[in-house]
Length: 234
Image (cartoon, rainbow, N blue to C red; front, top):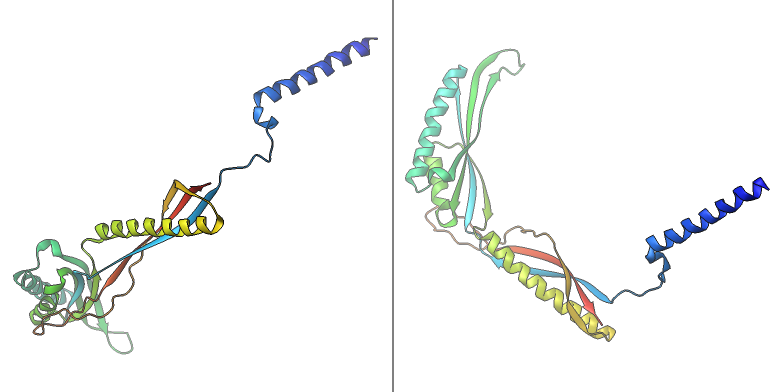
């Protein structure tokens, strides 16, 4: 008899716990087959083409001397002359930046004896496209021994990207409408929008430089935007 009195309360406790769990989790009582609302998800692309108006260059000033101090001193004088010439040609202090200063020994062919030193100063310059050729010629005439670049860019990149985004949204809506029409659905409002990335392809040659200076051809660059949009449908 004692065993029966212990078993009955335990069964009642299990039944009560099961009932409480059902109340605490009402979603367990819903049908798993409840349908969700219809949606259409598409990707849209937008492109804005513009002519680059900025050019970045690298100039190198290299000097050689028997001693390290001598090579650096000569290099300092030569680099100062190049920088001064660039400023006289229209570059501002904000446009000019020293990117690297280096000093290395010169040795005999067998590498056992130091016979001198090479000092180098690398200068980065940003310019408007219409002044770029003149700055290259000016730097070389003032003593620059190396030129690299140009790296072309757009000063209004952010504004152009926003325009590309608007085109991407319009493209996405056209695609969604076409899908809705094909499926016999009515396209609703946008439910979510996710921004993608953009890329700037290599420029296409389109000469735009004064013939008296080193020619710089800015060509065109595409600013691209991608969006993913989900629309309601019915």
